Amino acid sequence: MTLTTTDHRGRARRGAPARYPALAAGAAGLALPLAAAAVAWGWRDELPDPVASHWSGARADGFMSLEADLAVMVGTTALLAALFTAMGVRAGQAAATRRLTAALSVGTGAMLAVLVTGSLAAQRGLADAAAAPAPGTPTALGLAAMVALGAVTWFLVPGDPPSPAREAVPADAPRIELGAGERAVWLRRTAGGLGIAVGAVALLVATATAVATGTWGALVVPLVLALALTAMFAFTVRVDAAGLTVRSALGWPRSHAPAGEVERASVVEVSPLRDFGGWGWRVGRGGRVGVVLRAGEALLVERTGGRSLVVTVDDAATAAALLNTMAERAR
Image (cartoon, rainbow, N blue to C red; front, side, top):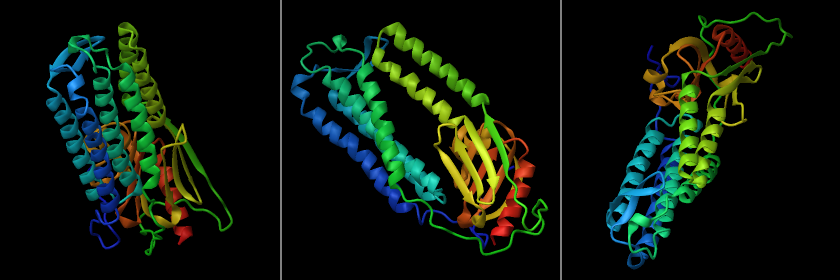
């Protein structure tokens, strides 16, 4: 099914809280490669012409002018920054979406800036770019810069302000009958799926390539992939009086929907590719945040402010019923 989110008047809410962080992050993401290009341009008399721009293993096999190399870096960053900024503005109802798109804007710009200028720095003084070493170290440093600056940006973007629901939980929403003083907790773990299998293959290929070519600095790539797989494909899902909490095995990313902000919880069928463009911790159509590890049954939580959270987990019907009960109590 197609999922949509609206505000309490039934109208889509987009962009207003997201615009400034998204624009600022997009500008910062583009400024990094522009600054890097200015530095690299100052080396133009020390660089071979053309410069090496692509490697197969340890051997340089692609070349272009310095101007073209820098234009590709800046142009690619500009396109990605524009894409992430548009996503943040148009689908940024939830702080998680705004933080993710801002982190991607800045992190991608940092990675490309470090990677390209690092590979060019290694070519200074060379007469022939064919002798340029493989950019293993610049790749590692670029990924480190992406993770570090992306994480800083994530935490700099403000979270959602409290937004208590003003209307009752719909009468037809499922509930669990609890006594006045009775408490309940629902807990499940969800992990694996096709996404982790694809990621595991990529991890093995990256490791084998780095070892086969002797570019040991590139081993940071499978390390980052391993951390990403752990963060994106193993979650604990909990429903209690506080609401819904979804936490990665690493502790981050984490999503929380306070019971007082839950408008309705229900069960839906999800297709990872159609609804979210893939597997893992995702942002889908309409700004929906999803923890999507497989196709099939999922918990849908609709929140105030046009926000929604989708989690593929077993026994989603019980989770939805208990969350509706806790939301009703929180009123």
